[in-house]
Image 1: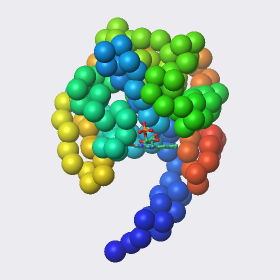
Image 2 (image 1 turned 120 degrees about the horizontal axis):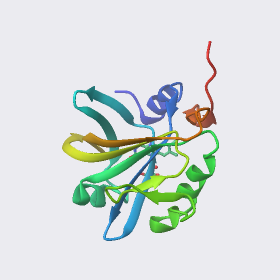
Image 3 (image 1 turned 135 degrees about the vertical axis):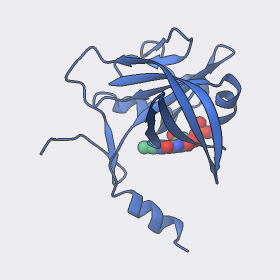
Length: 161
Ligand SMILES: Cc1cc2nc3c(=O)[nH]c(=O)nc-3n(C[C@H](O)[C@H](O)[C@H](O)COP(=O)(O)O)c2cc1C
């Protein structure tokens, strides 16, 4: 069996886009930062997200069954800091978040935001694996906006080869 630190260090070699996953329950926003987001299918358009069952968003998300997945731009490192330093609704600065037509929190200026509906939950040990249908996609007005990346436990940006 591989120990946790060896696993974490190996996964640190990977490069992932950073997303903020958010949901609104009874007018209270809940959110986490996540890198465990993947495309599932284009028919129908769907995503997989992996959410720690002990995180504050887990129960609200399984209750509302609606959430947004907002991919941060390189100009949005402060969102990660804000989510790390604050808890609950204090993670959501009103100037930085709007609302989707479905009533979910949407991060202004995100490279892309997916408005999602939970379709199934699978067990992933400490995590829940959610498959979700994409109801709406919003892309940044700035065509130059680039995803903020996470590798070796630090922020990065991509460059093309
Ligand atoms: C770069 C980064 C990536 C993360 N990726 C995930 C993830 O994919 N899934 C997840 O459940 N938590 C992830 N986390 C941890 C959550 O953002 C959060 O801190 C944790 O679930 C505790 O949430 P709570 O304070 O709302 O309870 C990540 C944190 C960081 C900083």
